[in-house]
Length: 102
Image 1 (cartoon, rainbow, N blue to C red):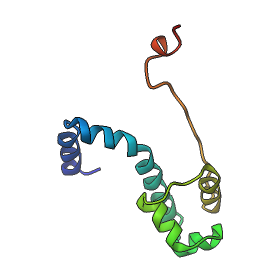
Image 2 (image 1 turned 90 degrees about the horizontal axis):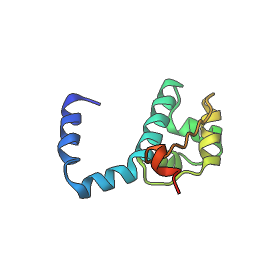
Image 3 (image 1 turned 90 degrees about the vertical axis):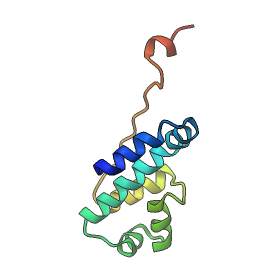
Image 4 (image 1 turned 30 degrees about the vertical axis):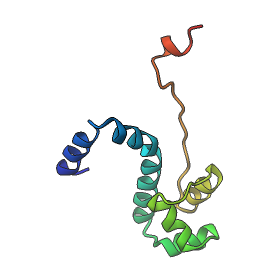
């Protein structure tokens, strides 16, 4: 992320409303960013990737733009088409001492 964009984001995150929306969409953004990066590194166009996954280019575009939710199964198929694998990690949102206390 560029310095200007980082500064802009930090300023916007001061707003509780913006922060809430950002936190809600952060995972979607990260998945889309990684898919775009991997597709470009693989030397594939959206159309070529779509053909490998047996879908339409428009669906790949919607996924990359964050306009469409992606299932884990579809994410796995897309990753495999680019020679990658999906890794998922769940972690407590609060410190463990607070999460696991009765």
